[in-house]
Image (cartoon, rainbow, N blue to C red; front, top):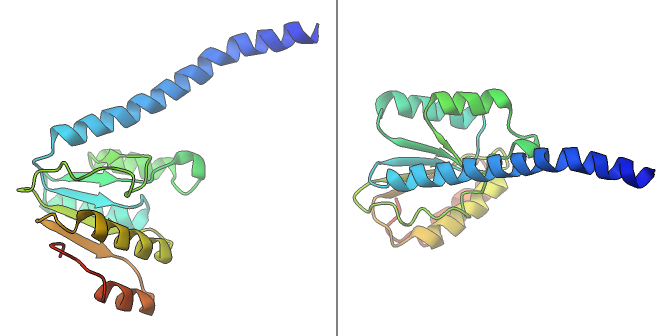
Length: 168
């Protein structure tokens, strides 16, 4: 009798879990396709979705209406991001990626369009680590800028001595 109950619960839960997985997959796929379709547009790419990044994105949106705004590392399951922040990002017509800024491939972006990275996570050490990896990954790309939000004195020293290539 316990087996029948287990199978009944599984029978009803499996479609719900499958739907949730597929919805999540299609959301990521839709963001990727939209990004690739707008590869000739200037892009502002944020390493995190938080209040600081949203305020900066809102300011950028008011002066650059056609620019592409991208938030990475947005995982609602982690608890760092609220539903209100996601809704605010959607109001800005921003793309939302669950993967972090290093996992996404922005190299296919048109070299005529500017990419600006904002490493704005609340964990300043993470910003520094990601900045060094992004410098290494995109140092050959022209029209690329990077802003690292860190008040750590080691950060200034670390970034001033890092090879930047063509990144400003």
